[in-house]
Length: 554
Image 1: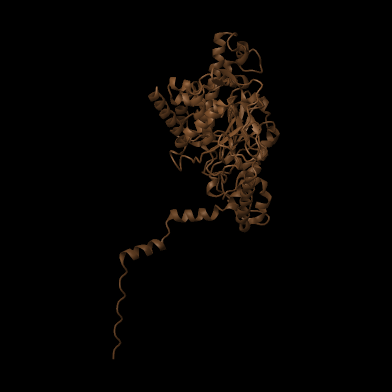
Image 2: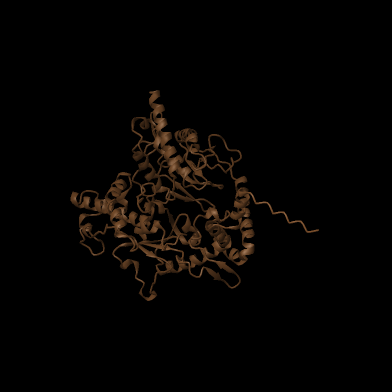
């Protein structure tokens, strides 16, 4: 009997066939992402950072007298913490094509004063993209240099026009700015033009130049202390660019004093080309990642630049297989160490304010003088180191200080306003000496800061009346604590800097310019301030609502 014909196999369903085809065919995008994840390991990132840091150290050694400055946050990875004299904050978004701007909330005036005092400075940053320099170095910092130079030129020209009796103790005599000495350039020789790198197109350069006068007007109107800049900077600021592709003849390195400008040397730490990305050490093979220090949240697994440099030899010697486990161990031990310090924190005691000047009583009000023209660079009491090395910044003589969350004894602090949502209440702290507000960033909760500001201002007001010194702290000491201090200063202090219970707040208009002026003053002392736009909006909303509420009561 003939064999029966085999039955034909059933046709697959269209949906199943489509899924099978999608699984069999890997898109270019997914393939690229898979390769990137494979190469962007933690060990590769740390190895790349260490190699780029060696280049940064070589360049910094060419001008040892110039201070090394990290552009936050990426720049912090490319040198040990002890190597940095300061930090700055220039955003690449302020230099993006068609979006150029001069930020009055990120003035970085401490950097200009430091450069004037030391004859220049060296700024470190990096970028992941296929560029030699990030836009923060290509355009944001050159714009910043130009605007400051233009404002100083206006200040000096005004002093010349008004004669030697006007601000002579601040900006010097007119003869000094007329170029009667070779050491100091006169106003006519003061270079206030825009200096951009050669790879920036002329059309973009012309567009930037068209905004310089407008940005200079904004800088002058924000309340910045231009007189101090004019006194400190004897030569105009000018950026210079150095990358791993820059050729420097070591026998022809010029002394920075020989230049007729104050150099702002911009080091892009990473190699921009993709040639020979696979590297070999004595024991391990690894993949080089340009700009590895950028976007640390995506790869560092809790490791910070300080922890990395503290354990750098162990981490790099561990190799790709053991690196992740070692990082977990280092981060966990650091967390436990900090938690133990927090558990054994001393009690915050409320004590009367001890001051040689003392509070000035006027009727039933206590008034504290706040010198608006005081210079933090010439004062030794505005910035204070705690036992664990973190900085605490006093805002003039307003009895307000800002800092990151601290777990050890602080000299001169009477009470703490803790805005860190991750910290715990110290034991045996009274409600008069400690207030904890679990404020989170604007990305997590757009109204968290605004909802907690009434309690913060009320706490500050009670303690300022009692003559106590207040520490406002948050997790990093750069954002939320700055915004809380801004609300306190705007609502409880008058224009002359006197604590007045907020009586002048009702009489004046609350504008963004007014708030910006007070932010500029705070940033003059808290040089690490980096308030986010979302939190600043909440402060402005709170102040506007508070103004309306007080007007209704009157």
